[in-house]
Length: 159
Image 1 (tube, helix red, strand yellow):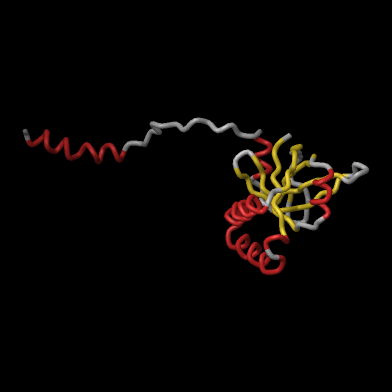
Image 2: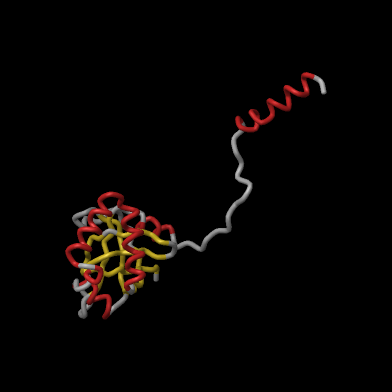
């Protein structure tokens, strides 16, 4: 081999590293919810609106985290929102701030399902992962105060 050929072979990997990378493999697209559902699910706080017997809407700001095709929410087991969801699973969700002041005008209609203990534990871990140290501290304090049965997970899917 000539000297130039050897130098060009040695330089080839460096040239490959300097080039912008191309994605050779594109994973198959997962069936996703609408952009509005994703937008609301990525918000810091979500306003979950449930409905009373007479149809009056009741909004509550909550922590929520997207998990695939559903939005996982965590709340106290004996709260009124849980009782309203047992009676009527139709809900709406919107992005909001910590006090419940709505952000934007995107309203997503959904269907809520109360989760069993194993799925509630998964909801706790997903929410804890999204909210970092505050999520960790809040979950642990809740477990100490109420125990595992004191809170319940709610899965909301787009209607």
